[in-house]
Length: 377
Image (tube, rainbow, N blue to C red):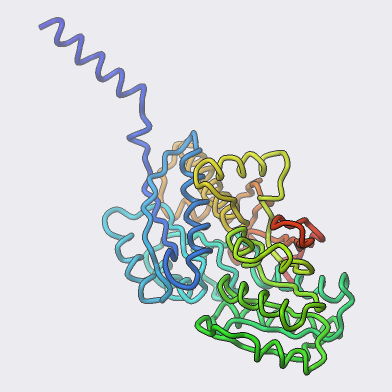
């Protein structure tokens, strides 16, 4: 009997010394893994999972749900994620239309929704449960337009943008900033994600006398636009949206097709040669067999800040609730891989943008300019 008591005591001591299982925190990861934003959504998922796997103070249990490419699919994924006890936060999809559908649900349930969607309107809705870890269009599109005018000296930009909420958001900010810089677009062309020939739009840009092609498209349309532009307008520079900086996007083009192509983004992880970003690059390659992009890095940082908030609450002896997490995200500062994150009061956490350019020799871009944009724009 004495030996049995000793064994039970030893087992209890062992469990007390290994509390990680008791500290597991469910983290729903709602991302588009199929459809026209699958490349971006896969990067988002990979960044979240890599961050969760490398944490020490908090043990997240990611629950990945595919939101596909429609608001309805995102709502279905949300309803699944809300089954059982409320999680302290949810990773929301990169697609703006899906985030617009989920934000009222997040406010209704009182759960923070962390995303890397760039759609500017998201932060204008006054939803206190919204947190964006990628610079919004009000930041990156200002940098995009300024680079076109101030660095390239272009005065007659032609803007080709996606017909989605993402595309419309970026187009509005580009038009506003280009007009302020006294270089209004000579052409604005909306294209659906299903369009498989962009040569008519490019030829209209040529006829309008464009001296630069400005793209704000999802990854598949970006590849198509760059390839056809290099055939039809080989000497006109291209400054594209953040989809272009993705290694998965660049891999679909020949290095020669990338010559004279630049892109706005938050960071270029595969250009890193040292420091924490290079460590992230190495870890990502080991985990996924490919190179990360800024979407993965920003989502990695979002999970990192969430973990820091959860760990801080526990250290202070506070219960980890969605409301407490929301307060920590809204008032805290986090020094991440990409930037230093702090809310502007509307849930915008990142306020820097980078322009990267390709030299035509390989598929790894180099930083050409960096911009810090105040929350006021």
